[in-house]
Image: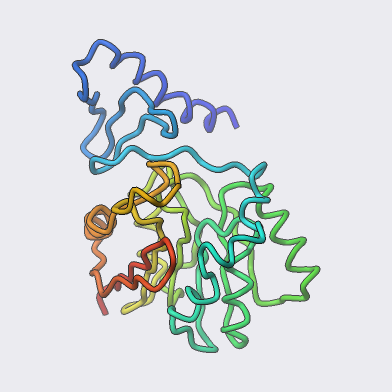
Amino acid sequence: MVLTSLRRFIPLLLAIICLGCTQGEIANTNSIYGYKQPSSDGIGKVYMGREISQVMGHQGAYWLERPSREAEEGPDMAVDALGLRPTDTVADIGAGTGYMSFRMARKVPDGQVLAVDLQPEMIELLEDASDEQGITNVQPIQAEEDNPHLPSGQVDLALMVDAYHEFEAPREVMTGVVDALKPGGRLVLAEYRAENPLIMIKRLHKMSEKQVKKEMAAVGLTWVKTDERLPQQHLLFFEKAA
């Protein structure tokens, strides 16, 4: 717990150090991440030109289950777009309350969903909901900030819905995700479209197609297609080399 607190304090400390920098200048600490004064919805940590957003805590779990989400995001439409097979092993990274995990679980009756989340409170909510709904093929996994704790080479498809932009250590997490994918395995990200200013989501909680492609290429994934069927989000498909 002490180490976690210290890691969260580092961006603020470096931002204070950087107060004397010229506007827009970033205090580089290594070749992967930089730090700057945090913006209103960011943590001050910069990855490939993008400031990482603040995390939505478990206190906001009700937002994941809001009645309007069906119309705003089309979750069933998103799951249909994945083309899941009954025996697939699927990872839901940033699963939260299991909103998408349970939908996918019904599509893989002879497979399983690995529901990964960083917050133990979310894991508890997910477990409770799984028991209530009688769903037996969803396995909760407690992640760390830099490790999704997925089994190596066993995942057919990994899904991240409005989660990737919050990862405090995106390169390390994605390295773990790529390792977990089978050869030819797929990764799908759903992110609110940064290209559309009319989408009323905080700036750092949206991502452009260009930025997502750049960050996934950095971990060796190949872009396959971008599906724009959802009302406000991209569905970006990537593949691991076979």
